[in-house]
Length: 87
Image 1 (cartoon, rainbow, N blue to C red):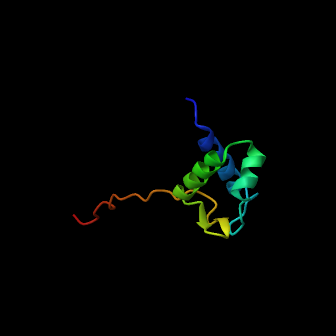
Image 2: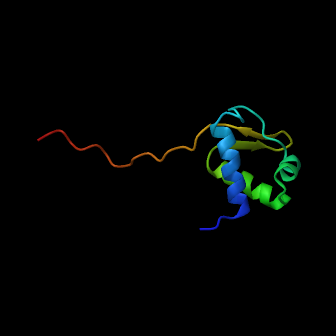
Image 3: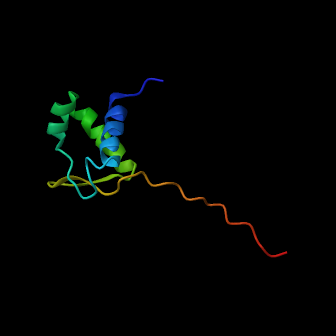
C-alpha cells in the first residue's frame, strides 16, 4: 500500500530517534533544514513533525525548535483488569 511522503519522512525520523542518532533531549534540525535534507516541501515536513508529536516522540517549543522526548512510541496499556483470584 502506498504511503504519503510525510508518513515516510516521519518513519525515517522515528528510525533516527529509535537508533539514537537523534537522542532523547536532542534537537531536531529546523523545518527548512529538514526540507533541504530530504528534498520535500515545507508542508510535508510540518505534517511529518505533527505525526511525530502524535506518536509522542517529539515536543515543539515555539521559537526554540523540536526536541526528542522519548525514543520509542508509547505502547497502549491493557485496559482489561486482571482476572479475579477469589473463588
